[in-house]
Length: 141
Image 1 (tube, rainbow, N blue to C red):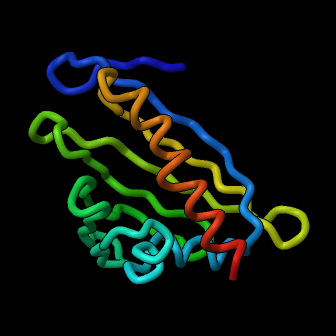
Image 2 (cartoon, one colour):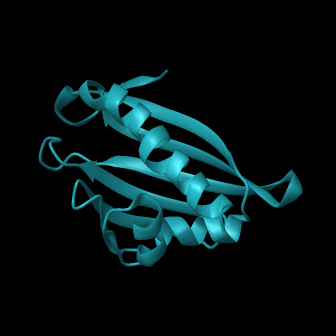
């Protein structure tokens, strides 16, 4: 696992995860970037401006940031920060979506610049608060 030095020499880490979802890339993309669908799968209010430069807040403002790049049904790149991180600290999050056999989606996730002190919680949190819930939401549709 790569460890890098971020702002002011603070240690940061990178999270890399891959998930197979039994839904199309189009449906997966929509659930991640459309606030009503994001709220539906997480169960917590989200506010998302689904455009490059748009701001977002998820999990009742626990997570906030800005969208840097969007390629419909293929990629979302965002600057993310978590409540409790030092002021001005953002990580770079990429959701890369690809078609997989049987109409499924291979979601390759990367989060660069996670403060080392929060790595364990964020690494586990993506699995429990995003992938499990996203799969349950999309696979029941």
